[in-house]
Length: 204
Image 1 (cartoon, rainbow, N blue to C red):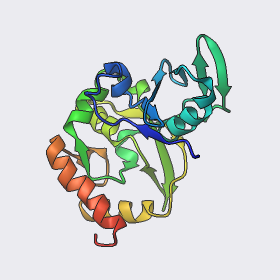
Image 2 (image 1 turned 90 degrees about the vertical axis):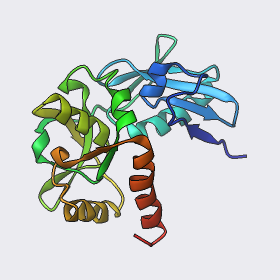
Image 3 (image 1 turned 30 degrees about the vertical axis):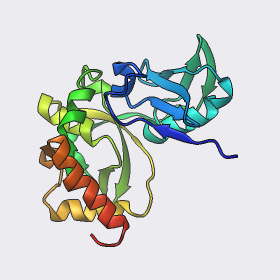
Image 4 (image 1 turned 180 degrees about the vertical axis):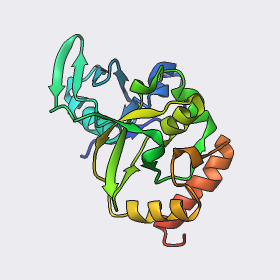
């Protein structure tokens, strides 16, 4: 039987600490096993889970969203290590978003663990001579709000749909993080999530 893992995207789940929820590190396995990953440094994190057999599953799921985290500890012991990525500085203005809207609630959440520009590490892909952000648009919007001139980044890869999303962003005048539109959570659910649903349904 295949193990089921669910990532918690809400910020009000009483089963996990607020810090874990704000870092999107909360997971439920097979409907009842609570596990979490807490980022503790630029490339390190700590796993909280009573069942070590789930460590690899949690790590792989977490690194899908935070590929730059390459050292994972549990009970003070290093349980998994990956080759470190090449991290570099990039001006915020040189990043082409692949998203149009940012959820205001998510910005308020990431404010709690972003203390400076070095805490913002974004996955990028080179596309038509530009650096395209594959994720981390909430953190980029926060960087704009706080006046950070540059952030940290690394090169990653996305699926073929990234070109379509970038093209649509450019059509809408979203040419850098300075153009990202911050909206309420309810507006975000309608404007962005509905766009994504329609896109993958072939209706966008």
